[in-house]
Length: 510
Image: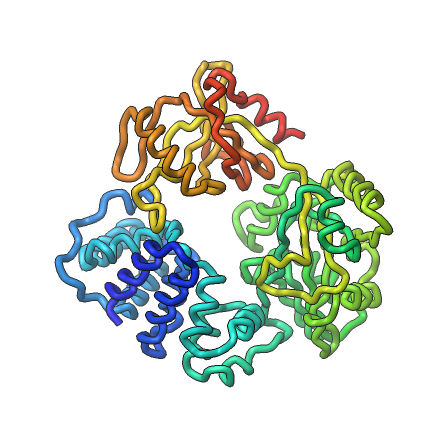
């Protein structure tokens, strides 16, 4: 398959509004792929690279060489070149990486350059995420989509599952089952506005537990062998010796646990998320790793997926919880309550907040563990912070947002200078109607532009919801928003009424 064929498919997916249409386009491409190409097709059309890091940033993608006039690159050639790009290291790496990238881009047509730019920047937004891709794999292979989803969550890799499904149909999927030592994709939660609402949505047959602002971990133990994975299935065993010690102390032969690690202060309250994340990010022997001992991690387990040869995934949560209580000491289990009514659940949530945690999760007692899915059986409830900020610049969208101004640069008012300090970017929460409106409005405020962004007069106020504030060396104010998303524009407010950097820092300190 030519890489140009994949680029044409990607453009067609981006231009197709209906989910069913996207599925049909991707399925047709999968049917045309050779067996050796299927995994690459799934990765690329999902907007992902097999190499987590290539060393290529936005700066390297701002000025592209003139595109090739005719397509010549095959899909597998491109994948090989990207793999080679990711391996560049050592003295002269930046120049060598630049040369390899320039050579690849110069051999690419305009459409191929568009796809490569989206893949390398991580911003290929065309609407072919995991849900659409799983349906497309099922249609192309002629198998039930539920079987594809289950195999993908057990294997932890939809591309691998796609290859098996296209090669062997339903029979090819039977090989995938939970194996101790191989991570599965974690179950995720939907959002509810309040604890009583969540409790009622689950028909009052639910447990409430602390929602921790830590790092999600999946712990696998087979006798003395322990492996710890993150929610992205990265092996971090050597970075979390406390977790390994806790797992080895359990009175079991084999177990798979889902949980979270968290850095706590001496008084038991959680440290800032960045301290936990920084600790987990450091490998033994890394520069600065001697500081790790000063930030110990506490392990909390909230689910057990396998126990001594028995898979628990399909059991109701009440049975999985009972298994956890049999083998996990109380200090290792996340605090949980099965409330008698919504008021008791709300009081439990209020106590969790008082202790410094993010909020609570309300979980059905009858549901299985739906690995890899954001199912309705888990509902997260946490306070929502909002700020009125000013748009400082905006980036042109890609994929289905091509031609619209999409990614907003957000700033808070700086009383000391009368200017604005950038806090981060977001393109989340924008409906098509908002995209059209903000494109027209921001172009009216344009002061200058480059190939990929438009700088505007700081006049437009937007209300932003976010989950927290973290320390940042990237922005001059020293802080950045976590998980920012647009709620609405505030044309009724002037930039002089926007929130200040002091208000943002107060949230950070709080």
